[in-house]
Image (cartoon, rainbow, N blue to C red; front, top):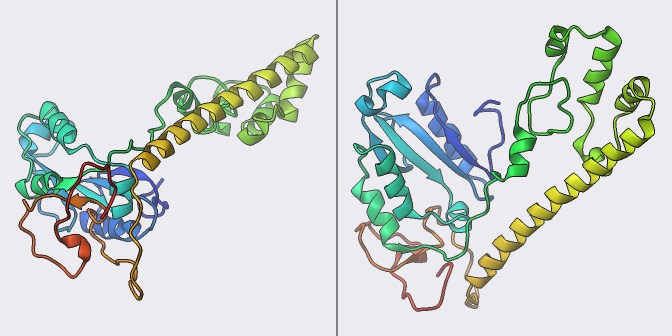
Length: 294
């Protein structure tokens, strides 16, 4: 997977261009952020790299030399669009605490700290990360010749099967089995080659195959049910934090402001930034009602 060829719009990504041109990576990140989907990229860049992203932290090379095998200083930069800042709120206090816990020598830029502290973050929950037990199993690369039941894992290829010293007919069947679509398994449809192999090795093959169909069908149902619960929980928290949008005046159009803090209420001016033509650059009155924008 290449940072330059993969569509990363709508995703949260960490990029460390250690062996790439940092300037080209910055340009690529700018292009990715033009998406209207909530997108953010956390970049670990050499401190000398020019960019217009939020500098989250300055890291000394001496404190990272063991991990990076380098002595130069680094900047942890957050490239984020306004949709992502609102859709998945950043708990800035927790971020600072975790960074200082991870590396006591970390330097948090005062300008970035002011930008976050002067805004009121949305009260809804961020979207859930794909770190639940079911997803981990689907991503895991485990020893064996079957990988069709783990759609996010690396498929077992022909070279790996050759090392297993299997008969050519069996190896050919396994290659086809591992290409079987997981969506078909969710319906209880097994690969034809798997059914042939089971029938050759097991006299009571139909009972075994029926058991496998049930496992895949109900396992897929559990995945769907877990995902549905997570999605429902997120949208309910988002709806609870919304306020009634104000009616637009005649001729008033959507703001084209590109600031990542576009949807966040500004409660106090700590950054002392110059005001822009955007209405979102000015102070907003904050009341006791949870809000997601102004």
